[in-house]
Image 1 (cartoon, rainbow, N blue to C red):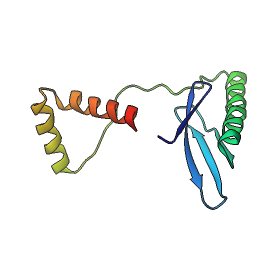
Image 2 (tube, one colour):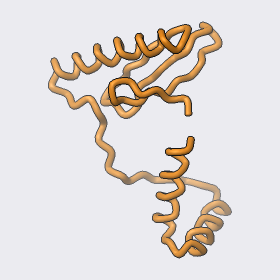
Image 3 (cartoon, helix red, strand yellow):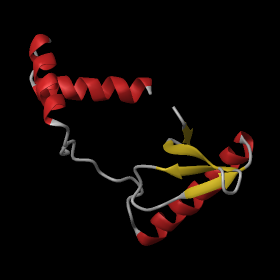
Length: 111
């Protein structure tokens, strides 16, 4: 997966061809924090600096840095995919919710 853990926070890493640099963006925060660098060492260094600035700003403003997630979200798929998922869930002896949650859990770990 194109992620980097910095200080216990996950950042998604992409390459920006327009500026020929890597870009990191922290996810799951109550605000935006991104950073750029030409190599992995620089990316980690810049990520640490960006995170430090973000956390300091949160502390000054009394804001919780991490978003809270309810565990609920809506998903729209093609009707044929919906039907196939119901069949797959039943074949595994699970509800659609149980089956989908497990599929997402596995994909998020393996990605």
